[in-house]
Amino acid sequence: MHIPVLLKEVLDGLAIKKGEIFLDCTAGAGGHCGAVCRQLGSSIKIVAIDQDEDAIARAKEELFPCDGVCKVGNFRNLGRILDETGINQPNKILFDLGLSSNQLEESHRGFSFQKNEPLLMTFEKNPLDYRATAAGIVNSWSQEEIADILLRFGEERQARKIAEAIVAERKRQPITTSQQLAELVAKIVPRGKIQPATKTFQALRIAVNDELNILIEGLRQSFQRLAPNGRLAVISFHRLEDRIVKNFFRDKDKEKLGKILTKKPVTPTAEEIARNRRARSAKLRIIEKI
Ligand SMILES: C[S@@+](CC[C@H](N)C(=O)[O-])C[C@H]1O[C@@H](n2cnc3c(N)ncnc32)[C@H](O)[C@@H]1O
Image (tube, rainbow, N blue to C red; front, top):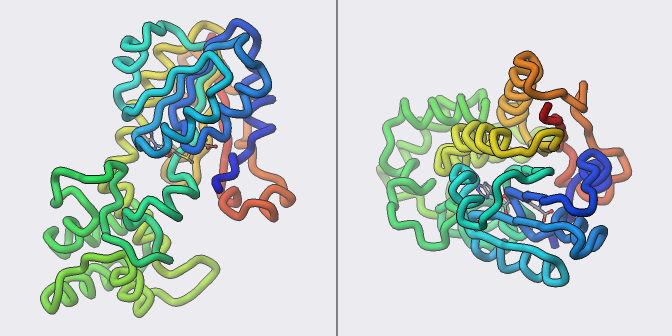
């Protein structure tokens, strides 16, 4: 079961009021938008987007009692999705980035290094292009290219050694499962505070889904569509995402188009982390459009 992260902080920070339109760009299991729905009922309109159709099915159940629209789609196409739903300017927008616990636990798409699943890491169930999956990358990209993404998107210190081991292994047999890759990385990266394959898996997922460029595009379009005095909240889970959000907000603040409401990112309390380990790296930033 996915537990929504920083829920109270998001609800307090967005301060959604009756009559407003709330856009959840990463509906996931419907944790945040479901809570908004329970709090405000049909006095507001909720638009929930997720690129994963299973997630949208779950979010639909959470939004059942409300005036909600659920759309399968990538937030890189936010403008078009809003046009399709006939919404011009949402008042409050949320991005809760990354994966839900459901996707890690039961998507069978190789997101988790603790499972033995096909190494896809795509949000589509049946990706059309095998070369664009994680298996496609590790089995066909050059050693230099693999090392480069591990370094850039995973900040993995052992990037070169891991890339070398991947290329040596694929000469023996293709790397097709999450377990095969996790075991290979565990032979190189020493066990520390985090699981050895964490950074490698993060890097591949970012590369497969072009996550950083899409985040920039999603932020740009969402801020453009946000109503005046509207608020945009973003929860990120690693340094690369947080840096993009921080810089985007800083630029809007400098251009006098927005006012940052979180001088420092809001982080979970020790109590929340004890309840939900997934929350430990979360950072929430909020900006208000002028
Ligand atoms: C952390 S989960 C959201 C959880 C949700 N807030 C909740 O509490 O139930 C992130 C969700 O964002 C979705 N997602 C990630 N990137 C996306 C994108 N570019 N466009 C649309 N959805 C995306 C994932 O499929 C996942 O369901």
